[in-house]
Image (cartoon, rainbow, N blue to C red):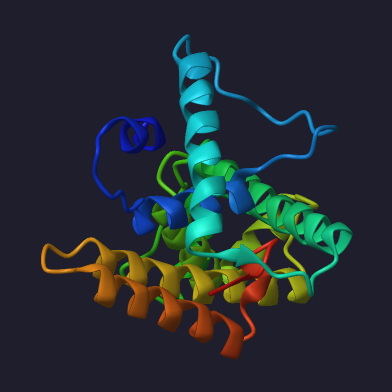
Length: 223
């Protein structure tokens, strides 16, 4: 829609940086493999939302030509594998959270272990797929109470515990998402202009690369 409007009106158009980042994150975190049979939205409005998202992704493809290009240094097959691994980890975390969300008994057992570390208790947090920022809260909480969760899962014979490698990957994802979250807040300030927006994007990309948190991206972006 934004792309079509820009072609119709006789003005110079600058596509939204914040919206572009939003689409990248949703594509990386929530994109599913064709063979996966995970739960999908069943609402009647989903078809219309998918069509709108297709238009948005088309818009973002053009935005790449104007502002960013895909790095050729990453093998597309490796990039696809990274995307799949991230999706699997997020799905696994979500399953763990739902175990305690849906069972008061299991959550009570979890809180017993949590209160040994945090006297006031801490509950698990479930993300919302339409708000990627909620994913940060879910993953941060999982890391924060990973030991109590592990103990509670073992008590109930749940064979879905997170490995050390998965915990490390979650920490890396959180670090990258927090950097992006800060950048988006800067981009959405009322006093932001194109100069400060480009500086923010540049700082974000450099920060992700230096901190080795680029596993959050199945594609590497550069100016």
